[in-house]
Image 1 (spheres, rainbow, N blue to C red):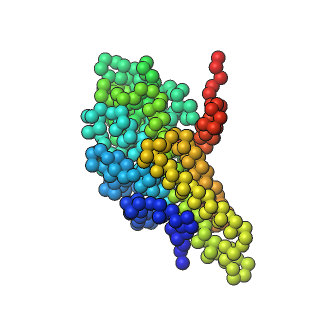
Image 2: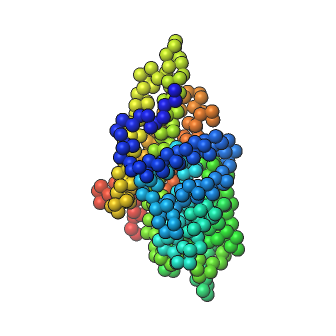
Length: 394
């Protein structure tokens, strides 16, 4: 008999969810089971993004799920977190697509865009008719985005954009890019549409991780933008950082989904794999210790994410709390994937099982949206009141 994670709800976490939250979780879980899992290993092996599923994501209200404008789903933050959990239980690349569309594209347009920008983009992004990407990271500046070199200079009523962004999810398939650039007025956000002269999107090649996710560069060479390309409400680096806080929230939930996937795979494998006579390897103390550690940390991560979601809905969530959850839950997912690989032995490296795919994926999640080390320093600054990562004054 296959054991599901839901069969092991020792702390009755399911009871802490509303009926709507459980319904959302279960509907996404069923969609992932039926539409993602039958083909995910082939997509990952071939490096193919399942673009045909984007419209289905829109029909399921996964895009813009926690927003209320334009007849979007207006779900609770916890419900949106559960969406991320179930998507990443399938694959980190699928959750990454949804995270970018929601937190890094629709969010800044809704927060800082004009009414015309909202009217034009939000319904199309929410339905999956259009795809977006978010351009902040540069080849030389990831953890230090304030040092970006991409520049936008006014020319007449418009702007001239020059620079380069790197490691951009959805880059070459996006219809619109939310791009952050340095101006004489500080860092500001721009909407750059596909096909704009001077704008190109070469893909990053050779990835072992996030194989079902499109990852690209954004290159701007005298890229001319109209006046309405500016997100007028953007006034500094704090704007893209607010976007990242939204995205990290979803990651904190999604990572637990990945950990659930590798744990349940390891548990079921350990109960069925017979060695040293007629006993399963699950009877061995060393394997039980690994399984207990995984389950213990996943349950703590579930409770951490749930409380974070309740705080977000109450308007009391801080970026430091998000850093703690992202840091912890991604670390848990990474360690669970490694332990699951050990439990599977040689079988852990073949795509008959999901372990190596999750293990490779979580390496990217461990790095993007703030590395593990940078979140460590952010929490250290919260605890001590001293920012250890400020550059020395000259």
